[in-house]
Amino acid sequence: LDEGLLHAENSGFDVQESLIQLEEEHRNRGAAVGLDVNSGEPMLPEQEGIWDSYIVKRQCLHLCTILATQILLVDEVMRAGAQMGGAPPPGPGM
Image (cartoon, rainbow, N blue to C red; front, side, top):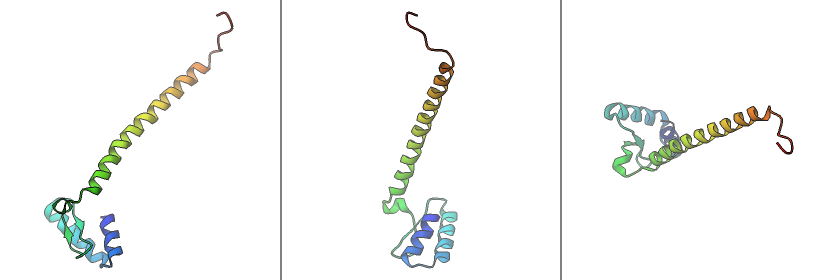
């Protein structure tokens, strides 16, 4: 609803009225609802062929898992290095 609020405000529509309409439409349909910035009426993004927001969020979730995995790997490597750093390095000829 934050995006709908911003779209309503930037498009010159009454924000509270638009928000109420979006909430009612979402409650009635049980699906994602967007705001038509030309008419100010709620609309279903998939019926209009709008997938940008969905694709961006899907990509974000995908990248978040990759980044979390990489951070955990770095943490594991640093922990292993700290454990190995406690022993003195081997001298020449060992």
